[in-house]
Image (cartoon, rainbow, N blue to C red; front, side, top):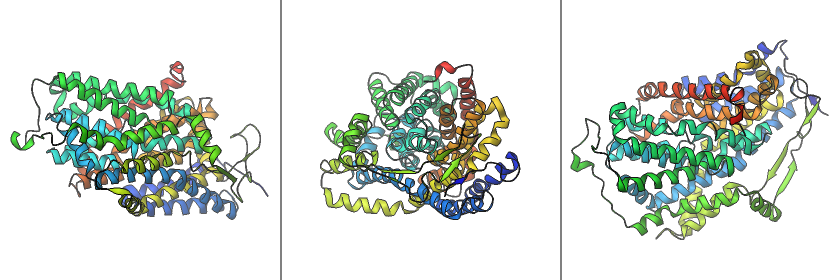
Length: 544
């Protein structure tokens, strides 16, 4: 028997929205104030949402539990499958020693701290964000910069600021995939809109990093390199996100930036090399080339293979071939079409589908798995036995993040299927024509709360869609803005700061880093908010 959603169970949209937000307030309090572990906070918030759905929104117990399990299942496949395989490839490069070659190949290109920050924190960090995401790039790049002799506060802060432009397309495009899934909107159009917002940040992030480190005057000394880095990344990000899809913008943009800047620095050097005033003598700073060109190519080969495999997996015709070999779709038992959406969310009553796709071969996680297995052949002295053992260690390493992802998606789905997200969205229509300005702010808040653009899109995607439809704005724009605004919250989220402090040996100094990054976060958020408002009305021609 079907159940009909209600959107103002407490008598008004305002009060209903206020109560619907309780799970999110809990998430904020537990993560930002109590600094509770992510999986514990997610469990408490999800349990609260289930109770509210049943007690206040009148959702039958069976449907509420089923919707939560359905969301958690989507979190496990394909989301967790992509995360596990991506971090597995990275872990193998570390265990085999190949990652040391990658680090050296980047570090020995230049001794100038400004250019090292752009190379490692911005370009290489974007590459790791694209392949792994979920805190991995900040951990890796902050540790690398400290190892090169950076001031620890700047190492942590610079890496957090740099980890903005690539986040929406991180972990093989998972934030965009989730946004499309929870809203039933066109994934390619969301990707394209993000690709027409984020390049405005991407092109200025290298300049932003350098000015933060040494001021505007000293930044002018490396302006040609700054321009090359910004144009290479922003241009590639625009083209790939608009014409290929959400899976590869970070990886390709990072490779183009590393190659473009590397080649440029072979023919151009700054007149003066800049270092932090309190650094060690020059003799202790220089990083010499320790490996041959062949060794460097071999070390990068796993990521080259990964990029090629994910590219092919992103082609619809290729995916169709794989799906002919194996795909299993089934209607989620006890939930499919048993929840009914009503006006004003839809023009006329419509059942809410719940179909689970087990596209085991065509999912990007499987592309990464094959890339990892193929890469083992080129890792000297490693072998398949060590590679498989590393896969199981990676799963064990990620056990709590896996739980967190599953529960956050469960939280998103119970809020969507119960109508709680719609209640909040309808309340936001009170902002009227100004809502597009607030769309990125919601995304920013979601990432601050959860530490993840993926989780933010899962939490607020449906709300963004509902509100946009009510005020007559393209919902693809507001859903994309949730992701674009979210990237600016990454640098101040408690989880990201915890990763940065651990990597830079600054545990206990989280407050210092928060104060360091907060002004940058707010300034970048302002750029995205104004741009989204303009794209909703005056600059509609910018949208696909």
